[in-house]
Length: 621
Image 1: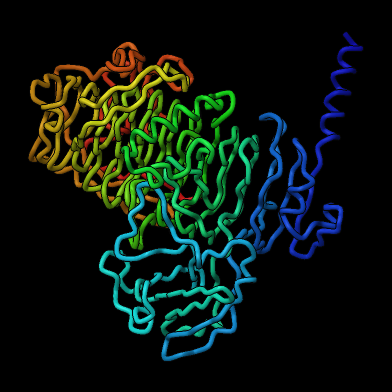
Image 2: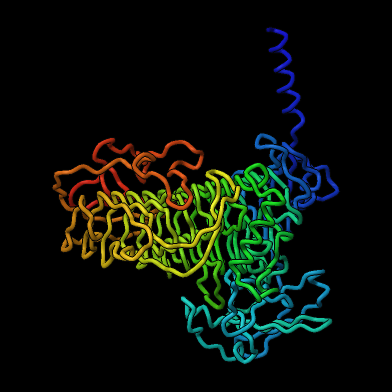
């Protein structure tokens, strides 16, 4: 036994000794050896050297480069870790500083940049395009102009820079009068910009030059950790589900990434992508309009299965505790690549605030094929949509999220067959839930906005439980939902399900302030005159919820929501259970307080008093 113990210790020591830490500093040199005393100058230089188990520590400063990792780790315990040094602010930017502006008239300046400056990629020649992308009134380049970190509005015509007017769809009309326009020929790119009273030669003016900040050029770079960086200003392209999805940070059809504690902003399209590869299809609908985009996407899914789309090869990412904002398509999106993943603790806001282009891939979080995906404890607000679950949402749990002030809706469930579970969430936007799916459970939520159903004929895939294995296709008749123990308030209710193909189950809901119970519902509380006076208040980096609760006198008990209670989804024959396959029991509330096993409270909070309550529901990192 002693010999075995000594051998074990030797193995541990040998494993630890093989792992190395490389340092990067703006004062370094790429000819150095990467030690703390002789650091590299670029993160890319360290990436070329790092092997599974190694750590790359980056020190204070701004790094203008795209990191293209040549390899990943070999397992969850032998990752390649990219991290900002503790206490340092490390910025990675896809932009370059531009000086030498020439003044043309009050507020308007011009700069001429040789095309050689951009190397093999010029964002001012690259137009945003792709499946389900709608350019509205003009073309848009992947390039961008920033004044002191804030992006300007691109204009199709020079006269709109010389004489700018507020953009009708922009949420910030004053900001929309800060404009730019570009023209490129074979030798040069010329940019005109209206900076108003700012002198661009004295302020910080930057332009996008790189299509990403951190993105592998080939799939299969597994087990990478990205930790603690500020990343911004990338010329990202539209990330359709039928295309390779390149984000400011992107996993590129890999497995086991951890993206945590980063600040991600000013991506032209998407902040973080958990997307598919290119060879399964790239904007296939745009290139072949003879059949619908839905048919093309089914073919993409089949091709993905043939090349190994499975838990063994793809997904299982962790995206947590990031702050993501000022992206014009999505904060986080992923087609097929977010399976078996966790998206938790992220603060995502100001997504598609400029509204110069639109499309079907917009929202704080937009996932295609959320199979056994956990989406929890996120704060999603002031975005086109909060959470958009599109196609093949199965085995997924959406819990403990705070959503408010989203322009279209908090949650859009589109053409899924379930089972999926939505519990302990706070939905406060005017439109809380738009349901074009079936097989969902909604339990212990606070729902203050409209609940509505969308519809249309579309056949979409469903899978073997806890697997990507394709079982079949089915249309969306709607219904087959469970609504248990929710607090529903306002001019809303469950009437939208009257004409659904499948019946829904309802029990234990509390209806306040004009909300209407479901026809045939038996165990419920209906107080149409009672106003819960729900209001969010921000103070000192925290968000507080004010809510007033009535005294609820009933002669029946709320049911504890469990796998046994919920049964199976009609189409998939799959049970409502946890993503890992264990039995579901919604026995904790929004704050992870234990619920009573018998007669748990309706809504997301187990311990609230009658009358006014003030609750801290979010605190910024």
